[in-house]
Image 1 (cartoon, rainbow, N blue to C red):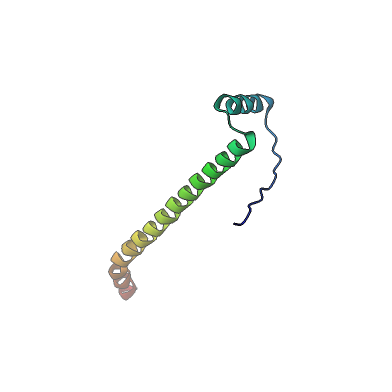
Image 2 (cartoon, rainbow, N blue to C red; image 1 turned 60 degrees about the vertical axis):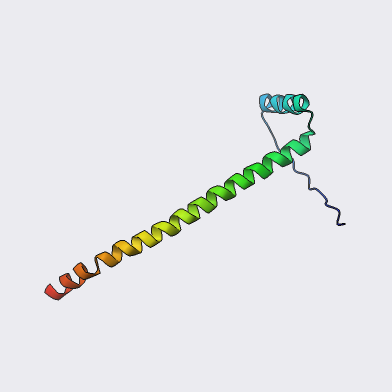
Length: 83
């Protein structure tokens, strides 16, 4: 089995945020590093979901824009014939 090695990261928190963080970890009996790992994983998953939703939205709008443009092809051709 392959052993996983974690990477260390140093972050700065406001004192009040750090105190709440420590208190939460103590209250729920979780290691601070484990909690931070879970928080980062949740954040990354949420951001990826948002990016996927935006990507899908842009793709859908692209198709709608093409449909709108194609509906006006006849009008554009007619205008060019009168110029």
